[in-house]
Length: 227
Ligand code: 6PG
Image 1 (cartoon, helix red, strand yellow):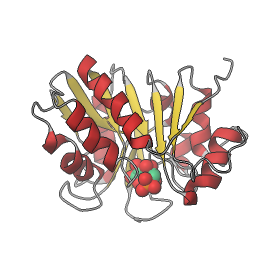
Image 2 (tube, protein in one colour; image 1 turned 180 degrees about the horizontal axis):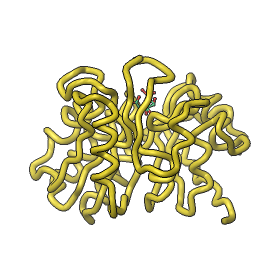
Image 3 (cartoon, helix red, strand yellow; image 1 turned 135 degrees about the vertical axis):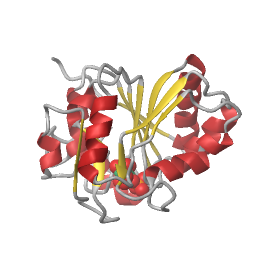
């Protein structure tokens, strides 16, 4: 499969562009996979304002921390407060990762829920170590190819176990979108989208997916990319 070069967009307000993509997908309906971390917050809020009807959408999370849904570290809670609670028409399905369960059970549950599911839009953040979802460099989770979801310890703070979609699941989605901001991500951005594809930079592996990968950056995050 020839590698498709990632489409890099650098702007003052990447959240605005990602919000447009989320709102367009929500208007068409389908399955949207959300991410955690701090980067997507503004994009979620803008998307809810642009498209308050998510009635034809199934919402998923690419990963979550193994904490209860009201814990401040929960990726579900982040999306609920900044997106789901702001909608006029809620999604028809919300496939929350059940972080309150033992992680192996939550991972099994997600794995089963994903059987036969086509994911339309996969939103991802990027860690400073170039991880995506909860696929950290050197972690066994990155090697899992026979499951749709798995679990393991965190490679970075917060150090709670994580449940995550696996690399084959992420790469099988129809569209992959990253939002990355801040100078502390510049090296990870350069390694992921400008360097060699490999497990040292887990997010670089999406460049092997046979689908478009769109990367929305602010100027500091993109400052070390040679383009
Ligand atoms: C998580 C994530 C993770 C995140 C990146 C970027 O649960 O932590 O889903 O993959 O997207 O670490 O996080 P920031 O946006 O906070 O830098």
